[in-house]
Image: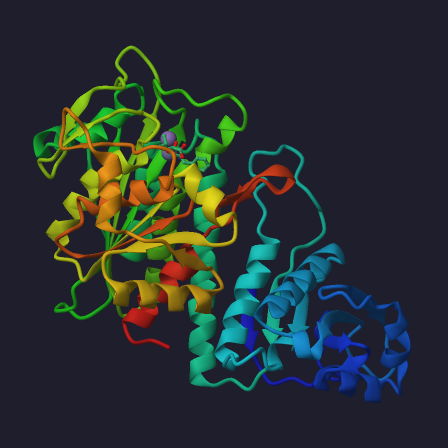
Length: 492
Ligand code: BES
Ligand code: MN
Ligand code: ZN
């Protein structure tokens, strides 16, 4: 789908469908008013059939005096309640309605209204991201594809083209490509999306966008002494990989942002086996890795003036005769020893070695992204990702970027007091604390390996995918990561 910015009038636009907003009760936006005037009140007359609820839609055909064959009215709710969430709902609803009616091209007049205190560039970004999100489909493994109707090909955002808006458009389209990649990697089944598959995807990105790439194999990990990562992969027949992807779009002197993504392509729990219910969802346990590939793709795709390194430790967590046992003690790359009391707390084990490895890139900041704990889902539900940081300024920057991207986070503490929970009688630390504060003890475990640089940890266990009828990857937190890196480099 292609987006463009062009000045258009709603009544003369030759789009397949013109989309305009209406506030309740019956309060027309400027574009809707122009259509109403052009059609001598026909639009207003139809309003009785448009429900007040934000995101309700009503299709009008062949309005007199209007060039476009179809006009889609979208309810924006009450004007005084209209804000970011309502705008995003309206955009998604418009996308869904356009798909239903099989429109090939549309002019989206929703973008020109004021949304809260946001700049119009925000509207452009969220129009693109909202529509691409709503129209994403994963049906490559279904023999019967859904909806034979032609897909929406072109969307015009009717604004007067200016450099910052064009830049926002380019950034948003590249971000949407990155989100789609993260979603698809998450949605692919675990018998397809293996560690080797992720490494091949990274190699493809490297070729397409001229990125630097290294893939470390088991032997490399053994040489380096990544005892924790190696312990997790023991029970699996799939060889582990450590993927390093480098995008250098910024000045040589600028230290990179290093993104570290948990890439467990399937988490059975290992010998500490998970119960059967919903275990299939543990294919999404590589979502952190997917979000790193997605963010790198987005930033490279938009040619962002930034330096980013993606580091992805990836393997399976399986039971078996070779699998790590509860009670095993391993030596991590940092030299610290860890008593593995629960093999299901594997994310922190692969991450701790990857985080130690990240130091070699002389990072400006390191951010890890991981579907790390069920406890984080209990704490924050499916709305906010958990945020932890060893530097408050970094946490504040990430929080601001997350709000901007509407890919929100909530900070949890990382006080030293929590280290007590990880005490082991036999090693430097245990890999689990008790049930209390499970997301925090997990973060505190990682904190032991990130003392040498500015670091933040995003626990996306509750936000990276949806369960139930709408089961599927969300692509989060790609929007946040891209926004953070751009803002950090001085882009608005
Ligand atoms: N991948 C899971 C975390 C998870 C669980 C994400 C459920 C989303 C939904 C992680 O590897 C895990 O198993 N964590 C354990 C940690 C525990 C053993 C300390 C958990 O959360 O139960
Ligand atoms: Mn686990
Ligand atoms: Zn896991």
